[in-house]
Length: 484
Ligand SMILES: Cc1cc2nc3c(=O)[nH]c(=O)nc-3n(C[C@H](O)[C@H](O)[C@H](O)COP(=O)(O)OP(=O)(O)OC[C@H]3O[C@@H](n4cnc5c(N)ncnc54)[C@H](O)[C@@H]3O)c2cc1C
Ligand SMILES: NC(=O)c1ccc[n+]([C@@H]2O[C@H](COP(=O)([O-])OP(=O)(O)OC[C@H]3O[C@@H](n4cnc5c(N)ncnc54)[C@H](OP(=O)(O)O)[C@@H]3O)[C@@H](O)[C@H]2O)c1
Image (cartoon, rainbow, N blue to C red):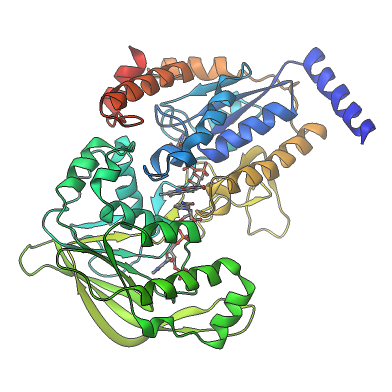
């Protein structure tokens, strides 16, 4: 062990003393981007890392995804801020890969590029009526209540209906249901965007249906998040006893997966807990074994959602190793509603010049090295191009999952440095070159100290309202405060 440590120290010293720095650009400042930057900086003393993000604000979904009533989850931004303040790291906010700078340009400017720009689009259901007004991707709804500047004007109509249907049974669906149903007095103490808080205070939504195409054993929730929604004050929970009947295949699934068993137990307990709703009480209906068939237009409001038609399903595939899949039975039922959220998963976006698997919505890669073409028998890598996070694995996993993902990507980068595939002998202009290019295009770069001005101002405004922060939610104001 000791000699390993010594070899690493010698190689670090050599790279620090005798070579110009190796320059690496990380695209995206979410967990994947910051964990990768942190790990590169720790492992390689002679390397400079620049992190670019299309927003003037860093931290990706930690700022714009994590629910406002989960402040403890956001503490990780302190760790990311320390990375950004490292003297060998620079943050370039308001710089978008694809429009401010192209991928071939970045690859010219840096010895290596790590893509960690997440998943900023949505899976689609591909069913009739999907473009009716009143239907949103959960991503947009989440961005709206979290103050993402792209969804500042989403303005979902929460006043013309008493019912919302959420399609999908993952943790994002649970977050959305909780925000719609929990008392606004509690949300007022969080960093929820003020436009969302006002709309929720005036909301007439009393009933939320959380719809899954499979059963209670297959729901994608985690126990803490389910317990939280089940614990909302003065909320009536409705679960059909018939949906809780398990098959031998379900029993095997539960035996093999402790989380699935725990979820099933929590739902079973909640189903037996209460009677009917009290007058005026808010309601959460768990609906299982129903897949979306079409969205129905309202009779009263042309072009607006009036309901969702669901097809009853049954599960097939009882082999121990196989996943049970939902199969339609040809029986249908409708739920009337004026708001629907599609919470069936995010999807990454392709960028010009980047190999992309359109079906999976990910960049083809092996452990984080980008593959020129995954379909070829002989795997060929894109030299100096890496990927991490949701763009690499698909849109699943919690913040910490990206830490392991970053370690995996770092191992490829370190291997390529050690083998000389990445070498600072091929001199690259790095951050100075990027700055010059962006200046020539009149792109307003938001460096980390300018983000810190936004941060301070948000905290100051929040303090006036007893909130941790009041988010600034328009592009213009974000840039204005950054440059004050
Ligand atoms: C609604 C929601 C709530 C969640 N809540 C939790 C939670 O409570 N706890 C938990 O552990 N996990 C939670 N997660 C999961 C966690 O947020 C993700 O695992 C994680 O954020 C994924 O990291 P990432 O860096 O791959 O992507 P992201 O966090 O999305 O970061 C991507 C970054 O890339 C930037 N970007 C995008 N396109 C470009 C471009 N073209 N050029 C430059 N930059 C670009 C974006 O602005 C963003 O900053 C949640 C996820 C969602 C969707
Ligand atoms: N507090 C937290 O820790 C937290 C909060 C939010 C998000 N996250 C994490 O972020 C990740 C993303 O969450 P997510 O909720 O977007 O995704 P998810 O966990 O993958 O859940 C997606 C849901 O959509 C359903 N679905 C997919 N395609 C469908 C279709 N065509 N028709 C009907 N239903 C469909 C899935 O059902 P099937 O199973 O049948 O495919 C599943 O119920 C997850 O890993 C999650 O744990 C964590």
